[in-house]
Image (cartoon, rainbow, N blue to C red; front, side):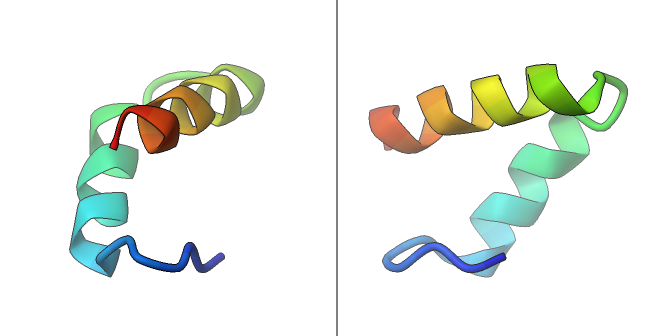
Length: 37
């Protein structure tokens, strides 16, 4: 799972914040987070 221009540390930090949510919610929030970044 690679996103051009995003540091791996940033992605891992984001995933650590949302690891208690279900997968579909995680995907939706991740997409929003990527757009904001």
